[in-house]
Image 1 (tube, rainbow, N blue to C red):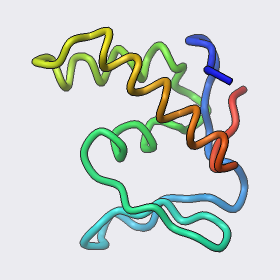
Image 2: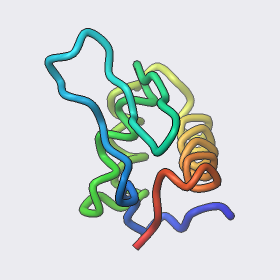
Image 3: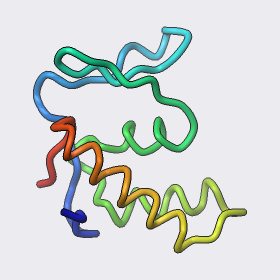
Length: 92
């Protein structure tokens, strides 16, 4: 299910990012972990229940301004959808 631009993604209980002091950032989930870097890390860091999907898209379009804005939006929506399918985040 593609998330609404007005929804607010947040990590589900039991999922969290490891400490920033670690050499690589990892999304810790029950019985698995996902190493994050670049755009994936930028997205997950904003899944705090405060940012809307629209805000996340806008911030990453500015951050990756050389990329086509529509492509950035599609990639973010697809990534959020995959994280939801893996039960790593919900939308409020």
